[in-house]
Picture 1 (cartoon, rainbow over the protein chains, first blue to last red):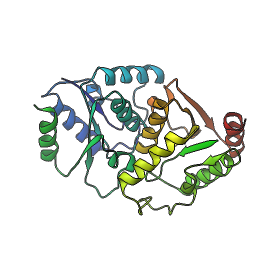
Picture 2: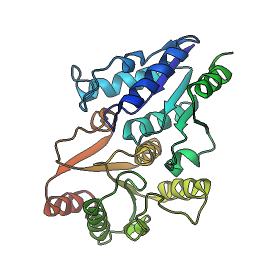
Picture 3: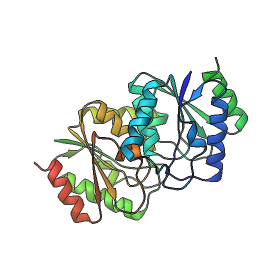
Amino acid sequence: MKIYYATSIRGASDENSDRINKFIIDTLKKYGSVLTEHFANLDKTIEGETELTDKQIHDRDLDWITQSDVIVAEVTNPSLGVGYEIVRGLEMGKKVFCLKANNGKRLSAMISGCDEITLFTYKTDSEIKDFLESVVGS
Amino acid sequence: MKIYYATSIRGASDENSDRINKFIIDTLKKYGSVLTEHFANLDKTIEGETELTDKQIHDRDLDWITQSDVIVAEVTNPSLGVGYEIVRGLEMGKKVFCLKANNGKRLSAMISGCDEITLFTYKTDSEIKDFLESVVGS
């Protein structure tokens, strides 16, 4: 199984986001190939990836979405790119699973109000693990 | 002409974002009907709109995108909803014009690297006005 993992890269990043990203990617790798695995190892500057042009990043990521069997998105932090990737996936008929920390902040209604998206709100790593196992582990 | 204006609602909002939103909407109103005009008058709490359910907001906004002739998006602040709306519009074949403040922060490569989007970086209100006139004023 090919999994596209979407997460905020250039948006607000903190140590906990980095940890959660790494945890989700490590969990997903048990069930398939994570096309965006490098997100766990990115130099976490606000710049994100710098070796490629924006068009090269865009076209590569769109190609990966096309190849993927499923999209998993971490939506705790606002992100233009993640919103973009979710809809590209939906329009291609991919299943989209969104994970959000139960942190009291409201999610965009375009995500939480979209019937085509499966949204899961988590408090603990263990809940993330169980959810991912239930949706991509079979 | 029906114009869908997309901007970060629940994400980081500050007085300048509010002012820019109002300025853009007032400018667009010279050229057509702005379906999301109420964004200029929203009670700017982090909650955004509270009278409608998330599904009602999602379905209304998607219907407005369907009705619109053109989409204008302010992309200075990260936003899941704006990224979502941009791609829904592109997939419907709408023209999408994005405005970003020249503030030194990099934009998501999914927006800046997407050939289907026309991106304009502004420093002044006058530049915003001239750009909008050139793309929706004729």
